[in-house]
Image (tube, rainbow, N blue to C red):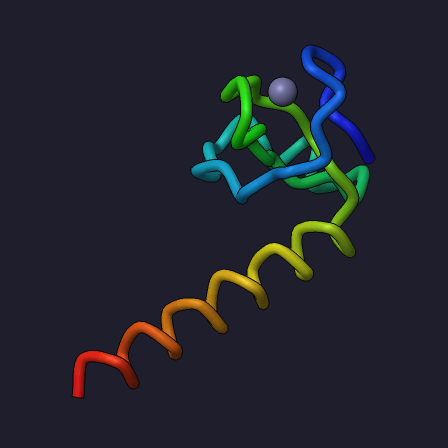
Length: 66
Ligand SMILES: [Zn+2]
């Protein structure tokens, strides 16, 4: 999965909107390129992976602040 705009493979989850529901029915989730901020869609497996890595970073930051 690479960005169609800049060929980067560095993505984060995009904010979910109601109109994304029809994409979700096709097992696609909105993601945004970290490099050029292009909004596109990725598979739900990629979205789950991005969601997990986001949680991991948040947990690390919480631990560091204690
Ligand atoms: Zn890009």
